[in-house]
Image (cartoon, rainbow, N blue to C red; front, side):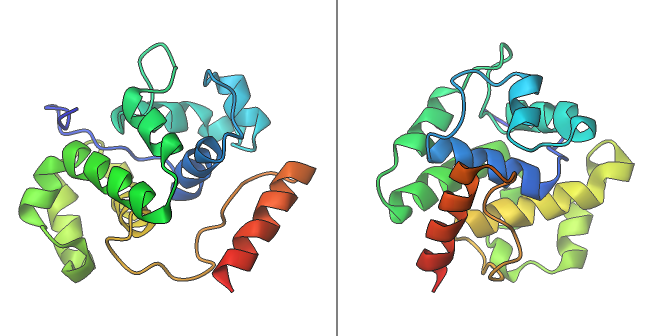
Length: 172
C-alpha cells in the first residue's frame, strides 16, 4: 500500500502499536481485530480508535478489521531476521515519501524527521507520528533500540507474564 495521498500518517501510541504487532506475531490475538479485542489485550479505551486507524494506515488491517496478507506474513516469520525484513519492507512501502527524504533513519536527526513530517496532518499529532515511525524503525532493526524503552506486551494476564519473561530472557 502506498502512503495515503492526503498526507496522513499513523499517529497512535508506539507502545500500543508495537504491542499489537508483537502479540499478533506470537499468535496471542484473536483472528479479528475489534475495538473490544484491542481493549481486552490492554489498549486503553481512549486509544482504541486511534490504534485501529493506525493499524489500517500501516496496512496491517483491512477496512473490515481483519489482518492483511502483510500482517499474516509478519506473523509467519520464523526468525528474527525474517521478521525484521518483513517489517522493513512494510515500512518502506507505507512510509515511502519519508524514506525518499530520509533513506537511512538511523542517521536522521530529530529536526530532519520533524521537517519531513511537517506536511502531514493533523499538525497536533506530528510528534506522535515521528515517535511511531522511529519505534517501528527500531522494531525492524533499522535504528538502534534502547533496551527496555518499549515494553513488549501490554496487560497483566498470566500469558502476558509468560511472554514478558521469555522476552526478558532473550534480552539477557
